[in-house]
Image 1 (spheres, one colour):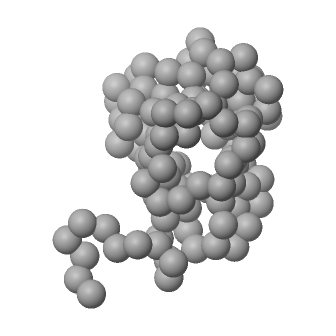
Image 2 (cartoon, one colour):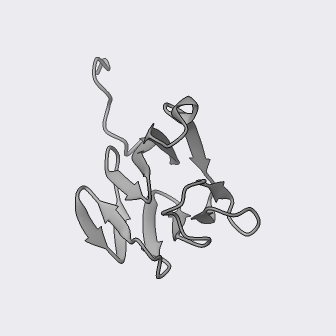
Length: 112
């Protein structure tokens, strides 16, 4: 299974539509690199905001005590499993989870 995050909304409009690959294991998201592998430069993004963990066909996210929280499909969460098309708000960023692989549902217009 291959997971990615697509930036839907960002303070820098040029980033919108960008896809960020999530590698197997831990993927730290925050405003500073290092330590973050996923850098989201925004005033409401914590230095170490959240941790995405890919383990085979599963993806989960953990809030790392960020100042402004982590929102999944409109609800604040501390930890959650993620699935295709879930929407996350991290500071000023709106991201959508995408997945490609056997277990991923087909996208619009996909042929069976």
